[in-house]
Length: 91
Image 1 (cartoon, one colour):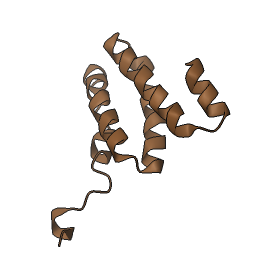
Image 2 (image 1 turned 90 degrees about the vertical axis):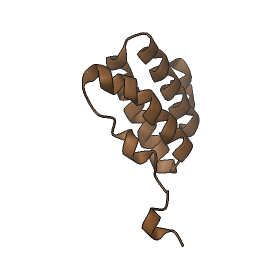
Image 3 (image 1 turned 60 degrees about the vertical axis):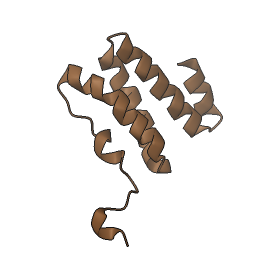
Image 4 (image 1 turned 180 degrees about the horizontal axis):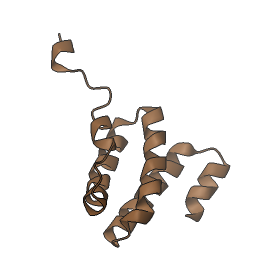
């Protein structure tokens, strides 16, 4: 988590969010989903603010195993389509 702190100190929020997401993914792989949850929330808030759709999609995929373990649904699943035109909106 030291890398995420350094990124935060120098104002590189995107890199900080990526680092948090990668740590959360590792924690989930280690069956430590509860520890991953706040990291996913923090990273997701940054990606949402930056409208970083590919990163929201990755976060959504990463959050699914965590959600299955805790019984929660991933709030990021709906955000992974952020910015996509709906069928009625397409020309």
